[in-house]
Image 1 (spheres, protein in one colour):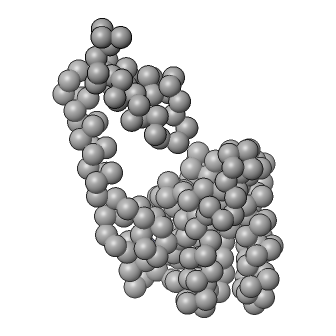
Image 2 (image 1 turned 90 degrees about the horizontal axis):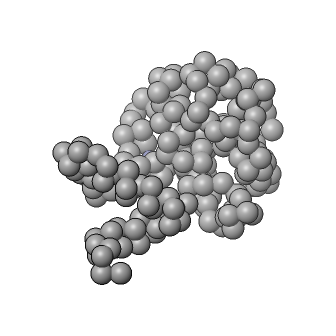
Length: 201
Ligand SMILES: [Zn+2]
């Protein structure tokens, strides 16, 4: 074992703390990095260090931000009564890239997934209820991923919200034929069409 550098053992052990990374994944990441020229490796590691040091979930919506409350939540131009619920920050960024949405977001931090042992209690739902109450939200758009788990999560939330807020408008974005994928993988046209075709629950 003394021929294996201690740095390798340590790095592999650390990477495996990431969700979804087993030994093979950790090896792929580490050796992939080591194959690059030293300058490139360092710029990747530096970007990661900066992002992980500065970014934390927004206290309101949960999107990753370098501030306590993100620019979307504090913007006077954003309509706080229109709230789009997504699984991860990356989904909100995909919607932001369209440049059309004027409401705010709520990041669940995942989806209900019995296979991965993730239940509703593990998601950022209490804060969602609190925000709907606080801002007297008019419409909640459920924009979880167009796949089985995303659909199950949307349906769970729709029933919960209907029970708690009988007058709230609850919609689900209409993915049409694009089922079994991830929101962030949709092209801009499909994503904006999905938003326009949203249907009431
Ligand atoms: Zn925010």
